[in-house]
Image (cartoon, one colour):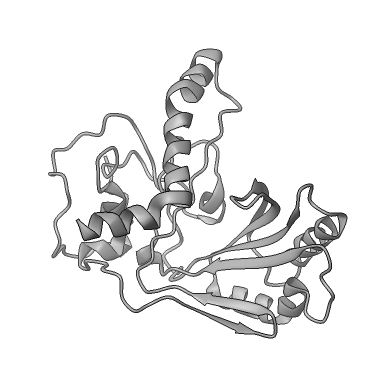
Length: 257
């Protein structure tokens, strides 16, 4: 059994893991391995939104963004997603990954105006971008299968690890982060939002946790599918709804008590 932390990112721990060396996970899981030269990753979400149903102008805008992703220095991997947010707006999103932050910087600088619709009258849709560029030591992955790459696995040229130890217990995500071997990862600074010519730019605080979670049950047998929709999916949805609708208020309440 391996550590989820790649060998070249392991250092002498000054902060202990939440389980002992003899811990055996209840089921197999895997991480992915990025090339040793990868020091920073980029995951960027390029979204369009409009009132339901998604407008034709929004669909055209999203198609244009998709075409830009095929240009020089574009992402190594891209995929579509759709979402209706808590305010009832339909969103179409391109999720793109780079294993080279410099390539992303060149690409974005060249296509920024086209991506945000600079100079256009956006009559019936809005556009938004969420881009994150964590250091490799501040990034972790967890997969229940090592046969069908999704998300970041598509840009991990080192493939999958063997079965890993750090999963199946509270706090395991932190134990999978290389940076957590030595750092407490307390939040630092304050988030802020700045508006300029109708464009709102939001900068988060340091050590913000970003989670992308996905499931694919398309190849499940009937019994597995029933188990997923009966036991797993309701719990997952409840957790995501909590983070979306109640997380901040509940955190404040718990702090106060």
